[in-house]
Image (cartoon, rainbow, N blue to C red):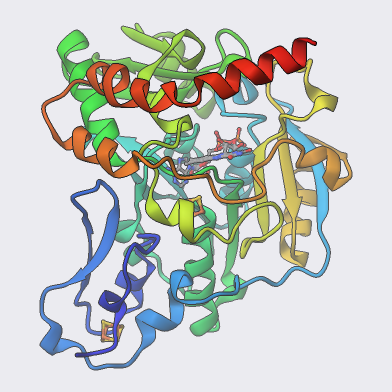
Length: 399
Ligand SMILES: Cc1cc2nc3c(=O)[nH]c(=O)nc-3n(C[C@H](O)[C@H](O)[C@H](O)COP(=O)(O)OP(=O)(O)OC[C@H]3O[C@@H](n4cnc5c(N)ncnc54)[C@H](O)[C@@H]3O)c2cc1C
Ligand code: SF4
Ligand code: SF4
């Protein structure tokens, strides 16, 4: 058997191998568990060059990291509409905007309502980059966008840390790192697309075909911003970047608005870790400062900014290039130097623990059961066993 990417199991599904393969025989497909994985239909066309395995982050123990020292900030956009509509402080969008204004194309993730999927795409204008605003808490399909990237041109590429680690290896392999700025974020994990399919199918029964979906919304404050918002009306095209947010959010009817704090089931499954990708439990080597990116961003949830309800980013620059980019966005953003203990407070330092019912949950997500039935049956019974320990802990705390 040829030694290629199909030798690996439960990989990150980052899709960079699709671009790397000189014979173009790799494609990225959805697995029956609802994640992406590379497949090769014509194994006989593989020339055994080993490139896919060389650039695959899952196939290496170490992270393709360059950082010698880390600059650490609390940060936010100075433009109120940007800060209002981005997931945390809007620094992700501001870096993309700066990159486009300075001759780069920006590669981000948008929600595609026709496919009901999150996908990477290439933006050449700030208007094009707007749909990247906001975290989409499902795996993103990267292959088409990555394949279109011309390594001889300049790009900002954003993505999960595992996607960015493979991408770093690819551009290093081609000696094209100088053309790229790489940005990742602190990453909790990605839930199965089966969860999103079931959730959005139930949603469709309530509001009709979904034309807009967002996973974060600050209408009741940043600290309560985990909310699925969806709409079935057509969005108009924004004429200017600053109009975009209103057209994409406020002026839409938001026929549906379901918050985690009010028991939203998508978030119950996501944050309960009931159906995360296996690699997020077993093979994530990207916690805290472990990154192949130039810059890492995230939500700054720590004590120091706990009263700020507009949204604050943590922004870490690892490389000279990353440090330069953060220096360059100072005109449009506030960056407050903070020790790592402050900026990374509350971030996960290890992989998400895997509940023993993960396989059963995934199997029930494939069945006809509703999310409510899975939650009030399998998940409820699973959590019952922790009840005595929880009660004892509560009594101990009270005493
Ligand atoms: C799956 C996932 C898990 C996360 N886990 C954590 C965490 O544990 N701790 C933490 O502090 N922050 C986490 N984040 C990041 C956080 O939600 C915000 O995206 C981050 O703080 C940037 O917000 P912003 O306001 O700067 O920018 P925004 O402009 O809102 O930035 C969003 C950025 O994320 C990218 N993006 C959105 N969805 C995806 C996706 N599915 N795959 C790849 N890239 C995507 C967009 O291209 C854009 O660059 C996670 C994000 C995702 C998508
Ligand atoms: S070994 Fe080379 S030819 Fe074979 S799948 Fe990997 S990249 Fe393609
Ligand atoms: S938790 Fe780790 S393995 Fe999972 S998507 Fe995020 S970076 Fe990749």
